[in-house]
Image (cartoon, rainbow, N blue to C red; front, side):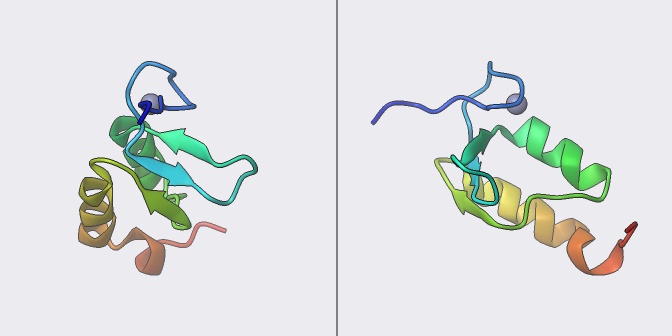
Length: 70
Ligand SMILES: [Zn+2]
């Protein structure tokens, strides 16, 4: 299986795939977590290799429930 690169930085292997965009965009952990930090995390996604790490971070920060900037 070919490794998918992050669609944001284009350098790092993607660990999740954003399903809210068409076609689905790959995100590496660093870029995905940057979005978590600004309060706009990717929540509709599919885990790729290493994706569990993102799910863990997302749950840890609880961003989706506690932070609402909009
Ligand atoms: Zn990236």
